[in-house]
Image 1 (tube, one colour):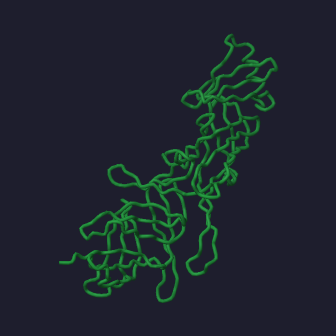
Image 2 (cartoon, helix red, strand yellow):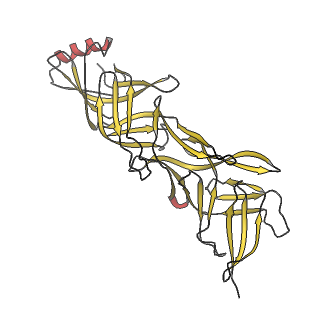
Length: 334
């Protein structure tokens, strides 16, 4: 008795096609292209909702489970789990565009065709954003039992007005011309160390990019990091230079902070604790620590003009202080 194999495919207009074949002959017994749309549930399982079943045997919906990934064209791929229908190895490729990134989701736009009319809709994957050990941007798709499928945005990313942007090109569905797509991440920067800088997408979320740097520089009006990106994509992307322009401030509430502005011009602060020491030039040398009082192996030397009104008073206090150094930070009063 010949065993039937069911194969799932997606046509150029993101319509699900089902084929049945006899395993011994590999000849198609039948092939149906179903009118409908894809949707994703909260557990990131894929379902195809059939709009008009062709026959009484045509299912009203087809549920698909598997492993999510992105291919070289940034199309969304689901490699199906093994089932009793022996469909192991089938790949369902959804052709579309990376539409929007939030702290816990990735929107993917699909284009379909009904009665010679094109339309688009969005499916949403749930998870969190992270950077891998090569400083590539990844989206970890949440699965059951605390597992994740990893979508890797291949190639380089850039910094645009203190925001991370990922840009790629791909051919449009109908025309052969390539279109440029930009995925923008909204967040804020945090300094984790001399060779670590983080782009946090939300203060209450674990989503964000913890980036490894091979060089950093702390100056009176900017902080600079050089980030290497390792990828097998050719030509390889250039290393990124992250330069945050801003102003150092000394406050009673926070200690030492570096104030920068986001794309909308709204200021926010990167806060530090520090060991402050007066130099012979009447400037202050700050040995920077994070807000947990961990040494980040970075220093900045500032004069009272840079620190504005608080600077002169702080220098007078250092001169009268019996200790050689003074720890400042969150909650320190002076």
